[in-house]
Length: 105
Image (cartoon, rainbow, N blue to C red):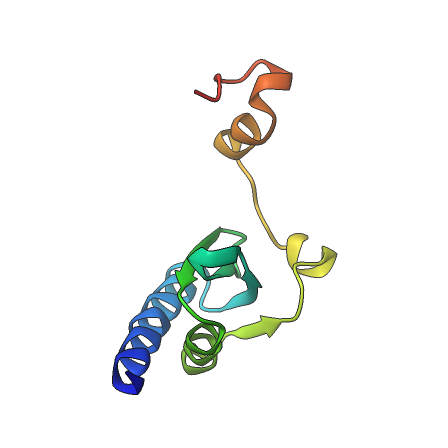
């Protein structure tokens, strides 16, 4: 079981590292519990691009972030959010119904 966890963490670390390299050479990460599905690793690259990955356990998420060598934030606060860059797609999905964007069907 421990070997499987290490492999999962290594796979996630590889993805996190690739994200950081593609988006300005560095990234910030925040880990959040999202219920039975596991833990979300939210990432914000140096260029403002953002995304997330899922890990089944907190230990795997923490090991992946540490192995990837990215900055880890305790919370998704204003400091981390201010680095995010959003585009038309995100704005239409976040408030599409209220602002006349595509319907959320």
